[in-house]
Image 1: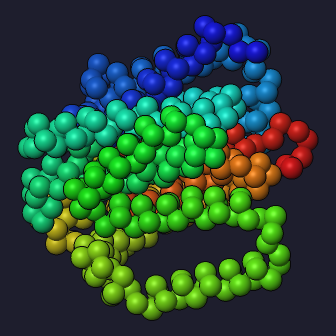
Image 2: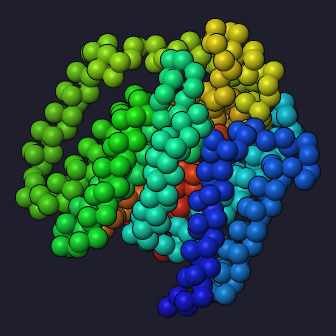
Amino acid sequence: MTKAPSISLEKIILSLVFILANLRALIFIFLFPDTSNLFGAAWMEILLWAIAALGVLYLLIREKQIPNYMVLWRRNWLLALFIGLAFISIIWSVAPVASLFRSLELFFATLIAAYFGMRLLPGRIMDALFWFGAAVFILSIALAYGAPPTGTMYWKPFDGAWRGIYWHRNHLASIAAFLNAVYLMRILIAWQNRNRDGLLDCAFYILSLLIMYFARSATGYILLIVLNLFVLIVWIWLRLSDRLKKQHYIVIFGLGILGLVLVLTNLNFVFGFFNRDTTLTGRIGLWSHLLDMAYDRLWLGHGFGAFWMLDALREQIRQLAGWASQPLIGDNGFLDILLHLGVIGLLLFLSVFILGAVRSFRYGFAQKTLPGFFPLLVFVYAFFANLTFSLFVETEVFVWFLIVSTMFMTTPLGKTDK
């Protein structure tokens, strides 16, 4: 059994990592820290990551878990290959020091996420996310009401939209949508177990809806709908699965395809419902120019994490896209991976992502519990959130941490993937 001191240290490390994983996305921190200063914020951040990683190493040695940890890493060698490519990209990077900084951040976050994925069950991760979400929501509401110039957007056309503790309203809305789904999952679990603790989850679920409303983010609204539907469909399936037969699944699949076709053939109506148009608030034009720039370094990219770190490139994109201010991310996580590591990096990343998603799918169906589907919820969130925003190690590593931890959580220690 895990000793009490180890549990306390795990909680401290996990709390520190949650802060570090979101640090550069906070309104108080510069998104692109100066990497030329050895004693600046960028390298102090890496030092904190290294300290957290040393804490994890201590726990692995203390609990004699290094052999299991290494077995799981061997079974996730694609992930190691992706991290290796990020480091090697320093050689051809347009900003080598920036790539070193971002690669080290990726490296330490992955090592720590792998440990927590190995050690914690979905319920424990959800417990940690409960407190993380409580802190994010309370602080964001306090900033939005108490210090509007800080907690809200102050430029058109988003003037007054809440951004809370994060640098952008879409970031706040994306995180809030995911936490909203986590609270919903915990509410349903508490209701099934007749546990009154679910009342507190209800309170934060409602707070998340309030934040989403004032963030005025179509990205967040769509995520909210998708993730809530996912949780409710899983919950209903768990209650009815014993009664469902093959023909029922065929009908359900057909209705799903029909619904998708209706959405795709009525995009103007769908986007209009969220007060948006099919240009996705200028993203289509931006993506066109970014694809042209990606083509210039098609196979290996500009170096991991380097592209948006250079003011000259951000200004060039601003002029090409005709934006009033510089874009700071590509507003598509997959496109940003292409810019950083080229086609080779994107294919490797997609291989890692698909592997994790498949394992999470199999894990959920094997567990046949609502917490058992939490890993799949993470991948559903990561996929949809990154279609119109960048949450793959761009301004944060929080989503990456969740992806890696769920990958290791669902990786069996046996000889075969079962």
